[in-house]
Image (cartoon, rainbow, N blue to C red):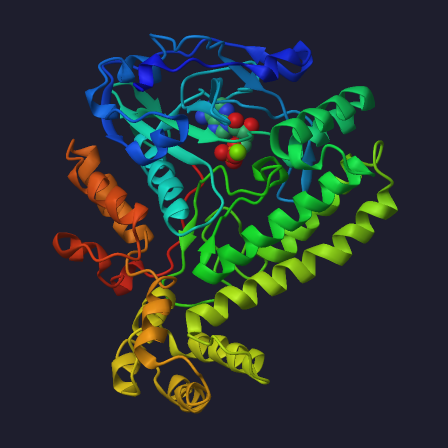
Length: 479
Ligand code: AMP
Ligand code: MG
């Protein structure tokens, strides 16, 4: 199947017009394809190379339509940095329709009814980041929206300086957010709130359809999915940066990538978003913020689910799901496959040692995956070695009780500790090249994003350590 032969449906438009506005994309000037993910296209049933599809560019630029496509933007509200904003919505995202359970969406395709004062555009810099991180999160096994392609253009877009406009074609099984429920709750429109819940169950939780307390079961599933995704984020050192309720997907997957970062040195207080001066969305706050957001969702659902019952579900399932997933992931990363008393203390001690050692989080685990007792091999990447030296002694002792042979243990650890991590300094280098019309590095990064645990002999340069001046930098929200 060729991409341009896909036939879309638009089930969201079966809801009443209050849920959306129909809108045509505004094409960019002199568009060109920068990169495509054939891997993402396979989700749609596409098995012919995207680059060979001569209509791909026009479809993404909005000058040609896929069969059945009826472009529209969705409305939603949201808590932004703790404060409620009753009307947000897709201000620069335009949905094209759905195929194979995936909703296609153009980001940066122009203004909609919900643009407020925005220009409806996305700049090349932030589009490259979103394109690559979507595929990288997938490569790491984390629930995420995907990105099928990115196009660039000659259109000027005003930010702090003039930049060029770009469009990413994103895919997700749902684009409904916690904030979509908040929109109808704030309007007091409980009838539409219930219609939305029914839609969400059909789209994301069809397996619950015949259960008792259907809406409560839906909420429970949202709590569990969100907790599991957060455990994944924390295990790989991912800082999202803008966990507003309008950026929380109703099925718990990661969406709306902005000033995100993977930790360089392990620093639990790290805040990637430069405008987040209070550190609301710091790395260590993320699970707590997810819980806060889920409580706001419970409130928004209160006309159709007893609020006390929702909170009980939240208290019963968030912490337990988060903790069991987090421990499972972290023990695998540490190579602890047997369960021993004291493992949790070893994990806590490891994190506090990493914090004091000033050591790269991902590189530490990658090196630990081939560690055979020579402490220098690990310590050489730490600025302060003493805290880690002590931890390695306890770790050595613990490893002696493991039943799995060292070579097998290493093999298993290398499946979860990536060699290639899309750190900000690497993305920045690719962006600067792309701004000079050299897209080779974007395509190299796509390869390692999709297979971060593999060896890429010709792409070793993408696994280099972060230069001191670029460690744990903060990023601007402007995109
Ligand atoms: P974000 O922080 O990127 O999730 O965006 C928050 C809200 O602002 C969403 O409703 C976006 O659609 C909207 N928005 C962000 N940038 C723009 C833009 N350039 N033009 C129009 N709307 C925008
Ligand atoms: Mg958003």
